[in-house]
Image (cartoon, rainbow, N blue to C red; front, side):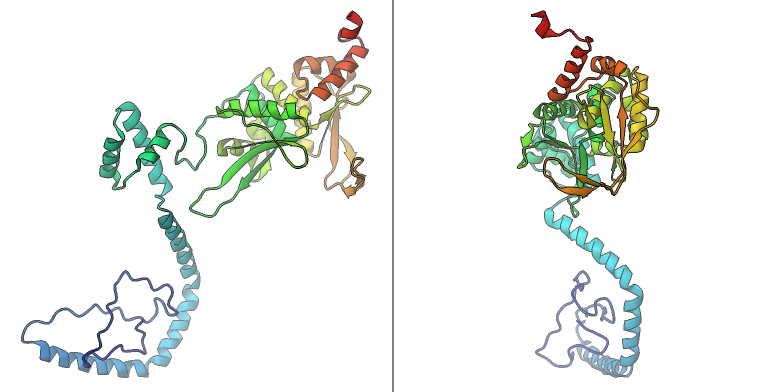
Amino acid sequence: MIGPSDPGPDPGRRGRLAPAVSPDESVVDSDDAGVGQDLRPARLSEPEGEGDDMRKGHREHAEKDRRHAGDSANADGAEVVTAVCDTGDTMSAEASTQNQELKQKRKGMLPRELRIKIYEDVLVLRRRHGLSYNKIIKEIKRRYGVTISKSTLSGWGNGKHSPYNGIRILTLEPSEDLAFVAGVIAGDGYVWKKSKPPPTYDEFFIGLEVKDKEFAQFFAKSIAKVLGRDPPAPRQNKYGRWVVEVKCKTLYELLTCNGKKLIIERIRPYIEHCEKCIAAFLRGFFDSEGWVPEDGVIEVVNTDYKLLEYVIYLLNRIGIETTSEKPRLRQRAGIPIRNPKTGKVHRARKDVYYIRLRTNSSLVFHEKVGFTIERKRKRLEEYLKRRGLLPDDSMMT
C-alpha cells in the first residue's frame, strides 16, 4: 500500500511500473487500511507532443511529495493513532456486517425478503397462470434479475421447501389437540431453540420424553393434527424413554415467551375456547404431572404456583372440586431429597406445590378428563370400582 511516508515508485525511472490500484480493491487485511493511503486517480494517457513537459512536471511534484512526507511524518502518525481510536467501534461493526454479507455471497443465498417475494410470485405464476418452469424462470429473471433453478421451483411448488425461515406455514386455531399439546408442554413437555450463525436460520423444537409409549404416541398424533402433517414416530433413547420431537417456529412462539414455556395469558384463548378444550388441556397436564395413589385421591404436583392456580380455576369450570382453593406447599427448596430408584440425594431448586381432588369428583374427572396413560387410567378405574361408582366386570362374569 502507498502510505504517507512512501511516495511510491519514481515515475522518472524507466523499467519499473507502478501497480494499478482499483478503487474497489479490498484493503481490509492491511495494517493501515483506510488511513493515509494515496487515492490519487491513475494517470491518463498523454497527448501527443506534451509528453516531455508532463514528465518534467511529474518529477517536480514527486520531489515535493517526498519532502512534505518527511516533514509531516510525526504529525501524520499522531493523526493515525487518533483516527484508529475514534473509529475502532465503527470499523468493528462494519467488519461484522461485511462478514455476514460475505457468508451470504459464498453460499449463494439471496436476502430473505427478496426470496419471499420471488416465492410468492412463483406460486401465482404456477398455480394461477399455469406457466411452465422455463417460462417462470424467464419471468423471474425479467422482474428481479436473478435465475431460479428448476429444482428450487419444484420444491416450492410441491410444498417441500419455502423461504419462510425454514418453518411450516400454518395458522393455529383453537382445538382439542392444540389444548392437549399445551397441557403436555406445561408438564413433562419441553421447548428449545437451536441458534445458528447467519446466514442460516435458528431452529425451534417442541418435544416430549416419557417412559409410557402410549402417551408419546398420543402426543405425536395430537401435534401432527395441529401442524397438518404425518405423526412423527416415537423413538426410544438410550435410557429407555420414548421421545417425540418436531420443529415449528409458529407453535414454539405460541407456547413460549422470552425463553419461558407456556405463558398463560397468551394461551388462554386456545384453552378456554370450549369445555372440551379445557378437558384436553387438563388431560395433557395430569398425564404429565398427576398420579393416583392407593387411596384413589388424584393429585398433581408442580413447581409453578401460578400455573397450579390456573389449573384449579379450569377444574372448577368443568365441575371438578379440589380440597383447597389454592395450591399447597409440598417441599421447600433446598431440602435434601432421596431418589428411591437410584438412591442418590439431591436438593430441590424450587418450592414444590400440589393440588388434590376431592373424592366425590373422581368420577367426574374420569368421565370428562381421564388419563391417556394406561397405568394411571387403570388405577383410577380400580378405585372407582371399589367404591361402586363403576361396574366391576369381574363380578358381572
